[in-house]
Image 1 (tube, one colour):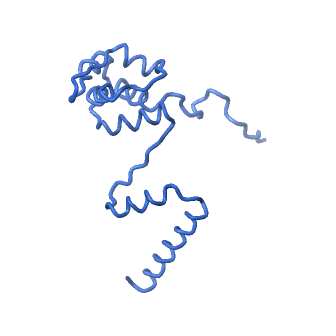
Image 2 (tube, rainbow, N blue to C red; image 1 turned 180 degrees about the horizontal axis):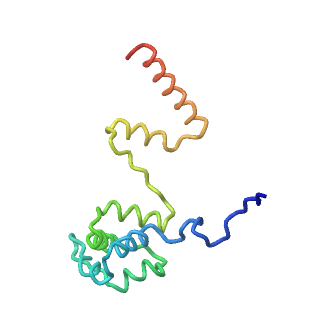
Image 3 (cartoon, one colour; image 1 turned 135 degrees about the vertical axis):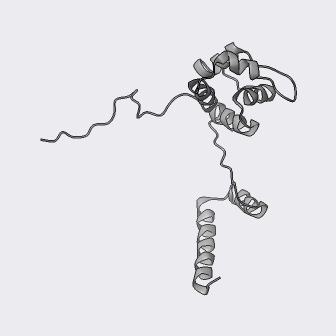
Length: 145
């Protein structure tokens, strides 16, 4: 006899984590053996010298503040985690603004300009551009270019 499948109970591992992106980055460092104190000891913004404390790092993980870290604090957190400042800024934007940035790695400036140009287009305009690009690609394949 088989039983019908049921939806997972709320609160199970299948649910997405409510923890924000910056909180997760700090927690990952802790999971890999770092401590809040060691992170705080390294948390010095290279440009301004601003630091973040052990309690501040704990707060970000456990009960994130209503406001995101300032740019100098982001620099200090980047230094503490050994991650690029850009990655910290992305995590802050995701956690506090629910904004996810997509990077076009491996493409030249022209492709980035085209993508930026298409960013504000309506769905119908995007479909039109996509069809033109796909038609061009198909014509190139068929002609051997």
